[in-house]
Image (tube, chains in turn brown, green):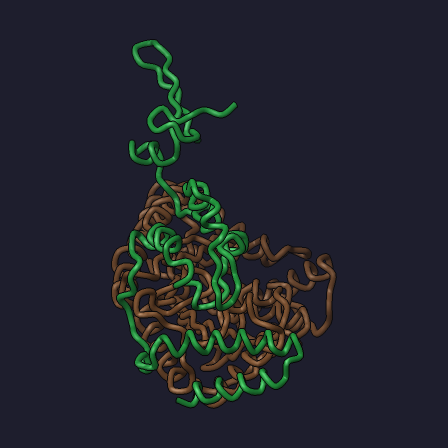
Amino acid sequence: MGHVVLSSRGRLARNLAGMPFLSRCSPEQLSGIAERLRRTLGKVGLPGETFYVDVEAADLLDRQLLVERHLISRQHADAEGPRGVAVAGGEAVAVMVNEEDHLRIQVLRAGLQLDSCYAELRRLDELLEGYLTFAFSSRFGYLTACPTNVGTGLRLSVMLHLPALKMTGEIEKALRAARDMHLAVRGLHGEGTEPTGDLFQVSNQVTLGKSEAQIISEFRDQIVPGIIEYERRAREALLKNRRVALQDRISRAGAVLRSARLISSEETMFLLSQLRLGLSLELVDGIGLETINELSLMVQPAHLQRLTGREMSPPERGEARAELVRKRLSAGGEAGGGNGGR
Amino acid sequence: MTYKCDKCGKEATVHLTEIVQGEKHERHLCEDCAAAEGLTIKTQVPISQILEELVLQSAAGGELARLRCDVCGMTFLEFRQQGLLGCPNDYKAFEKVLVPLLERAHEGASFHTGKIPANADEDERTQAQLLRLRSQLTEAVEHEDYERAANLRDRIKELEGS
C-alpha cells in the first residue's frame, strides 16, 4: 500500500557575502545580483540541460506555468524586480534568483528520496561555492533574510497524499501532531496555498542548531513514517469497515471524470485523488498512475492554456479541461487521446 | 470582555467551563499556562507573533526602537514590521534581541552546528567591510560624489580580489 509520498524536495537558502539582503538592495544592486547569478548558474555545470527564465520579463501565463510545475514559488511569480530561475536536470533542479534570499537552490525527486535530494543539494552548494562567497557567520551559520531559515538554510519537504485521513476525519489530528513536531503543513503550492486533491506538503521548520544529517534523519525516520503510518491505518480501516462505500466513491469519481462536460481544477484534483487512492488500493484498473500524474499537472490553468495554445476564461477552461480528462481516461491512458472516445 | 490568566495574569485566551460535582467552575488561562497544563498543544508560532511578543515583553521598548544597523540602516522596528532583515550585519547589530527569537523559532538553539563553507576562512570581517563599503558607495552615488564613489569602487575591487 504505497504511494503516500508523491515527491521529496530539499532547498538551501543562500545569500552573497558582502551584499545587503534583497529588501535593502538598490535597484542597481538587484539587477547586478540577478545578472551575476545568472552568469554563474550558466557556467557552474548544473546537471543536464540548463535553461534560465527571466521571471521579471516572463508573461503571467509562463510564470503561472512555472508555479504549477513547482519550479518557482507563488511569491516569486508575483513579486517585482529583477529575478529569475535556472532550471536543470530535467526539472529536478531549480535555482531561484532574488526570491526572498539571493539564491534558493531546490532539488526535487519522485517518491521518498530525501537523502538523494540532500546529496545533490550539497553537491550544487559546493559547486557554487567555487564561484561565490556566501554570507556566513560561525555562530549563526548561513545568514538568511528571514531568521527562520538561518543556520543550515535547509528545508526538506514531502508531498503527501492523505485521502483516507481526510475521509475518516482524522486529518486534523494527524496534522496537529505534525505541527507539534515543529513541522509546517501547507497546500500543493507551498506557503499560503490551501490543500487541494488531498495533497499536503509537510516540511521541517528548524534550520539552526542541528546538522544537515540530523535534520534529514529526524525528518526521514521519525516524522514522515509517522504520518505514512496514520494514513495506512486509515486506508486499512476504510477497506475493512467501509469497503463498498469506498469502492462506490472511487467508481463515481471515475464516472464523473469520464463524463463531465464542465469541470473546475479543484473538482478535478479532488476526483483524481480518489482515483489515485483506488489505484493504490487496487480497486481501480484500466488507468495508470502516470495518467493520473500527468492529468494532475495538465488540468492546472496555465498548463491547460498552454496545451490549447490560447488564453481562456475560467468557463472556457472548464470545458477544455473536461474534454482533456475525458479523452485521456477513455483512451485508457495512452498518449494522444484520439477524438474523445473509442 | 477580556480575562486575565488565573495563573500568571497575562491575557487569557483559553476559557474552560468545568462541572465538578454539579458545580460550575470557570477558568481562564493564557496560551503558555494552558499548554503547560496539557490543555492545548502549542502550534508553530508565526514569526510576526514572535516579534510582537518580543517587543511587548521588553519594558524598555525605547531601547529596541533605537537599535539600528549602522551598515544597512535598518532599525529593529522596521524588521519587526516586515519580518525580513536588511543585511548580514543585522545578525550582529540585533544579536541581543534576535537570540531569544531564534531560540523560539529553532527549538531553543541559537548556534549553528551544520555545514561550514569551504571558503569560510575568508574571514567574516572582510564580509562586513565589503558590506559597509557598498553601502557607502550607494550613498556616494546618490550624492553625486563621483570621486568618492570611484575610490570606494577601487577598494571594493581590492577586497573582492583578496
